[in-house]
Amino acid sequence: MKEQIYTIPVNDAFDKDSECPVCQMYSELEKNALEFVMGPSYMEDDIRMETDKTGFCAKHITSMYHAKNRLGLALMMNTHNDRVIRDLKALAKEGTTGKKLFGSKTDKSPVAAYIDELERSCYVCNRIKDMFDRYIDTIFYMWKKDGEFVNKFKNCKGFCTCHYGLLYEEGRKRLGGKAYTDFADTLNEVYFSNMDRVNEDISWFIDKFDYRNEDAPWKNSKDALPRGIVKQNHTNPENI
Image (cartoon, rainbow, N blue to C red; front, side, top):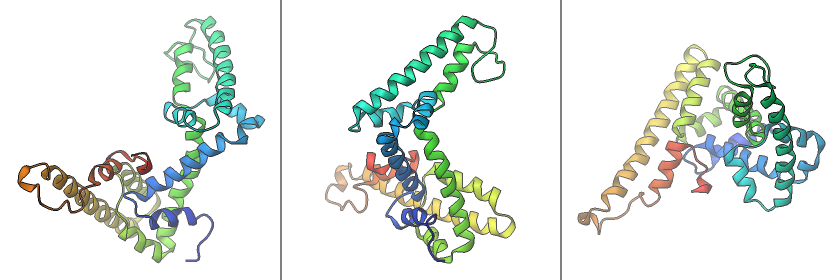
């Protein structure tokens, strides 16, 4: 199938030597989202309104702190805090009436409900999710339309457990009958064979600490731990 602009990131991820192409896609989206929010965009009114409202999760605000634009981060934190302080002062006055800024009544106090909502919100996470969902759509579109991609899928190094579960469930929703059976069979084979491969490398890494194996070759176990971390925790391999 002729490559389209929306298939390029998916093909690129599956072309890389990665223990999980879906992690690879997510990592690239995360990098782009952080670069976007830490670039000149933070001065745009519509972007600033969103960051003031949602704030950032602990993971992404830490990443932003380690970026070069400390002034941009300070400005976003300052106006976000202004909003949080204003909102919480108003909610604290309501006591336990059950009203809250985000909508319907709740068993929690307005203050607790507001903070719970704030803890679940992150501008960077939201930006990643919109595009990530499209990438998952594209995987199934290419599975149905592109035989070359199917071969890439079959010959990749598998997936982390989180994204194996995601593909398994999304395949159930998007494919029917034999199409889903074929996809699930392939997904299971790719996932389990590669999990076995990495786990065998981890086992040999452990065995190498036995003095009896001191002179034995490392085989493929020297980087078994970081590869195992990707498989278990869908972590960006560049952060390991």
